[in-house]
Length: 211
Image (cartoon, rainbow, N blue to C red; front, side, top):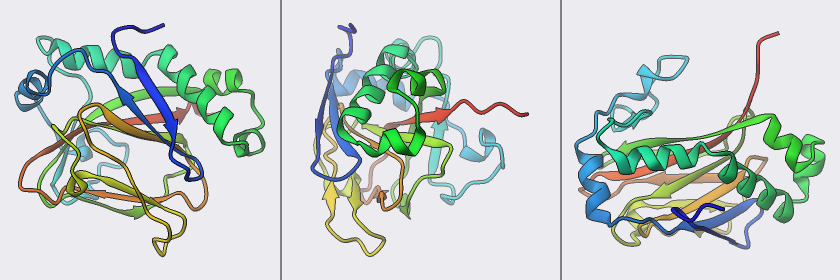
């Protein structure tokens, strides 16, 4: 059991969506110092299609600098089998549709997926428009590194594309959310402040190999 980054998960009352909190063993200012001195690239540099759908206001870091030990520890944790098993088993316990959507047991799901975390730097004006996720993603999540909860840095989930029944995710330092992909898992996020929003995007991705 991981004692460096204890994770506490709880339901939100919304279908397929859970929230969690990571007890981070360092302060906001300590992590911020590394984030602000990291090398960030446009998403077009790292995705397969070479595109940027955010208009130059989102940047990524996949591999933190060697001297950024806090970021590297987090990256290793977000890729760990331990965290993957914890999230997958939680999804199966709280979302019965996982069984018929995939026809795998939780352990089989873990065998067929990869969990990773990528650091994101979202500038003022960033908007991740209302969407559902693409099918290769079994589940996605986000960890916030804001100093406190702020609706202007948040993500909101809805029951429909008409924004029915909104549920907002909190953004305190170490707060996060995780959701299993499916129909009507509409969500959007943004940075409406005048400061940078730092976070880690989590992806539980199918391990697809070319035939």
